[in-house]
Length: 229
Image 1 (cartoon, rainbow, N blue to C red):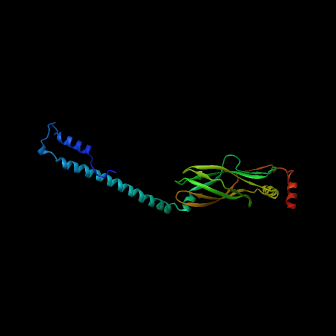
Image 2 (image 1 turned 180 degrees about the vertical axis):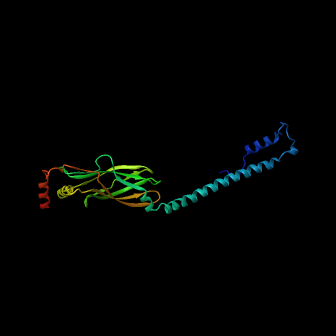
Image 3 (image 1 turned 60 degrees about the vertical axis):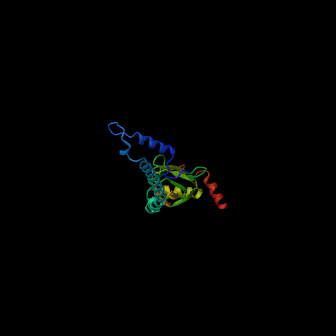
């Protein structure tokens, strides 16, 4: 490898040629006695190269130090609580909100929108919680990982199954003008910190499907099956 500050023969030749043809502003060749010595020109080039090399090494050292200090500083500033405060979770306003289905396969469905207001990309590792109509009715778990860009949002569906008794309970709460709710717990992570998030979302934006009849045709059979179990 070439040592830093080493001057090769081509550079020396170029300096000597330039030194021999040094001219003044009028274009006349300056006598050798009035010129800067060639050895001094070579020394100046060597010093300039050494300065450039030292600046490069200094810059690399600073970048390396900042690489250790910046994450530590960001971790101190963006605490888990601060990150959690900048994540919003709502039930999607378009559509029917939380849907309760009293069909042959009773279930609860809801489109959820997570908005990331932090300057970091977030990853939702997993989420769990419960749907409610008044008090909690049934639980859900979602283990699918989702990436949410910085200042972006992610939209996905949460779903949980209901049994016969839960369907009948929703029917009773419907007559009492009950209110739908979503209890959400999520585990998030980013380059700076990991944090958990809990949100209780109460909403009047919901729809009850196939709850008009006093009892659906499958409900008595489902009750008998639950009793035998």
